[in-house]
Structure formats: C-alpha cells, structure tokens
Length: 238
Image (cartoon, rainbow, N blue to C red; front, side, top):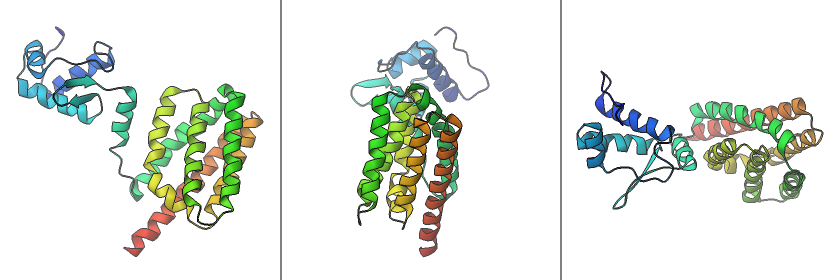
C-alpha cells in the first residue's frame, strides 16, 4: 500500500478509489475480509473516520459487503452487478435507457448463442416457446406467461456462454418484472411476444446471425413500445 498518495481530490474519495483499485488488481480477493477501519487507517495514514466513509461508499457501489459484527468483505461479481442494477428505478424516462442496454446485450447474445449453444440448450429454448404458445391461449394466465418470457431471455443469455452477460441479463430482466406482468395483460401482447420469440428461435436454428439479430432487435422495439404505452396509460389515470 506504499503507492498511496494524497492529491487535491477529496480524501475520502481518494481512499475509496485506492481501495477499489486494490480490489480490481486482485490484491483483495472476492469474499476476502478487509483490514478493520483502524488497521486500514494506519496503513494509509488517514483517519479512521475517512476509512469508514470510504468503506460505505464502496459498499454502496457494490464493491464491498459490510457484515455487522463480522467485518468488511470483498463482494462477488454477482453482488456487484445486483447492487449496480438496484440504482435503477424503472420509470418512463429510464425505459429507453434500459432497453438500449438490452439491445446491446441481447442482439449480441443471439450471435453468441448460434456460435456456442449446445443442442440441449436449443431444445430447451424451443420447448419454452412451445409452452408459451399453449399458455397464450388460456385466459387469466399472465403469471405463467411472464415466467416463460423471463425464462426465454435468461435461457438465451445462458446459451451465449458469456458469464458476464448472463449475470447482467438476469438482473436487468428482473428490473422489468412489474412492467412485464402488466404488459402481458395487454390484449394480443402475449401472442405477439410468442410469435417474435419463435422468429428468433427459427433464425438461431438456421444459424443466420443477421436474421437472428434483426428478429431480436424488432422484438425489443415491440416490447419497449408496449411498456411505454402501458406506463403512459397509467400516468394519465393518476
């Protein structure tokens, strides 16, 4: 820790940046217990209060997990992603941003799925769509349709074999859980989603990357429009 130096940057921010760098460099490993506030303060030659505030900042951003009575630990990658996504409050002005991120991830995911997916995974994705076809024909079945929609996108992420993408997608999709339940109840939306999912599956089976990416992009555009329209209707009623 001898490379730690102060400059004009706020001391607490500087300390938190330094500790974050040590985590990123692997000097502190995932689930490893960090030095106590007092020990870290001595090592960095700052006050204990400064270290306490730095730890709080890093905990807020998901780098650390503070276990009262036990200590401060380096958070796992999954915990970091969950903490990051918890900052989102999915409202109308953020839906576009959220779907922009989903496009980047899921349009690439279908290409990776074509390259990396196993036959078993492909069969699972097909089975999900077939189940959704049946579920879409049953009245008052929104909960099952929402579950299958979630399962479709998570399974597709798993097919990419990209572990970072998988963790991010699981949390981003969870952010839309409430909106998904509402949108599924919009007349004809479930049937439309099932049809769009089927187009994606067929394109993946053909190993046509361009077509699969186009189908995914159109699907996300369609769902985004449905979500925004639904939120607009709700806002107008308030």
